[in-house]
Image (tube, rainbow, N blue to C red; front, top):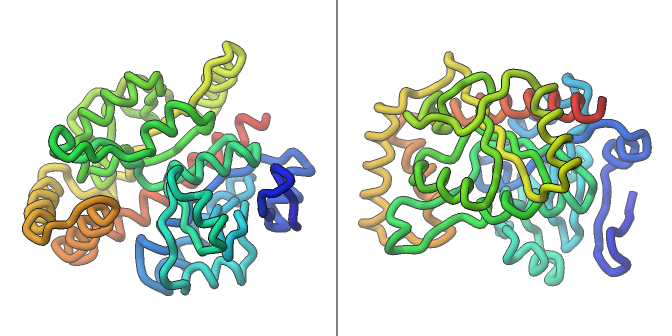
Length: 308
């Protein structure tokens, strides 16, 4: 079903998402970078299908967002998901280059920031991802700060994640979020998680213990006219976590390797994640998949609660 958010913007909704919008059913947005840049085929599409299925089990509709041949897709049909999972030379798009991918009729996989932009314009209030980007270690020299943080400060979407990626400077990331007025809520814990690990050693700014409480918090924010997003940090299940002390050893080794190989810019995060995958003999990816599925489950519950 093709539609347009503006007369000239090529955008299409999947049949399932279009039906959900017409019925007023709860919808959860999903990014596509994790499919194209997170893992190889066929593991990527198996993960994507699993996450979509989990959201449906909660009573919500999944909307995987991507740019295909210059068209912004809000939700993907089965064959489109397969096409994206197999595609090569896919742009990793954020706020700066989302419009470029559309204008140049390219394939584009959406990051957290780009997914938030598309979700808000499509009227979707909840988005599930793995972990957000943030302030990179050594940012005082490199000035490397993810666009995800600024997007959270301006775009009104609830983002459910397992915290900031542990390869980042998590304390500085939380400081930037606080400065931007972004509510940071940890689900059922007073400690902010660290992606692969249940705790970063940092106290969470806020804690809520139910999807209904999160939905109520967001409703009050809207009633007050407060703009911007909300970050829900959902600790990885205990059975799947890698302890923070163990992860820090792998992260330091990966950072040393990145410096030695002179990796910079957008290449840093995928390089570090790939190196950590090798160092952990694949356990980091298993934990990544577990936390994404866990976030999808909570996001579906929040979307249902908001809809109620």
